[in-house]
Length: 225
Image (cartoon, rainbow, N blue to C red; front, side):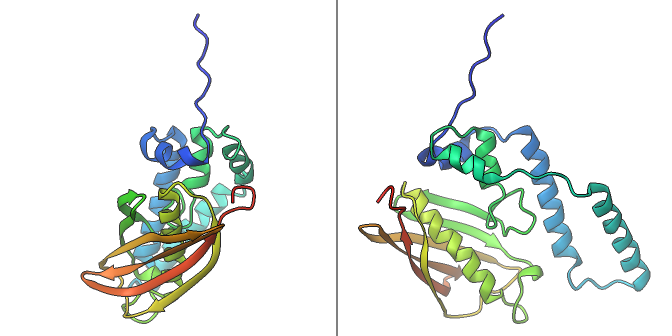
């Protein structure tokens, strides 16, 4: 009987490639189904036109599901993060960190989903569609949601260039309204690096119109800088 091969492990600079190319773990196939179902439900029910009896029935069903789920134990992702920085993270560890990301995480029910079209050291570009649950002014994406997304997009550009850091400052300039329920594009690239400071800029576009500009400084950890 042959010995079982040790599970492959990864470090911080292998994270993106492994997450994009390795097979999705079986449990995360189901976790993604749950995330997508809750996102779809959120988008479909907000401001829904329905009579009181229908709303009561839906509320009863949802409350019954919450009761069925109860309060199960949850994994602390800090352990997976520590393993990553010692090169000992498994593909399961990577998914527990990446797939619950609040922007783009497939298993995270509140995460806006981004279809990444380009990821390289020259920058990143993604496509997204935001429903009414992200609305601020009528027909427009809430400004706070915009900054939330751009923080993640600019960070993505940093990671795509094989650098590590945390957000130090993020400046947002709103140039026009970003419409809900229409295709938007997000882009970002690194401008320069000065010591531990990584300068990144990007934005959101609706067609050919740039609706938001963002620029910020990311700080490389002292242990790496």
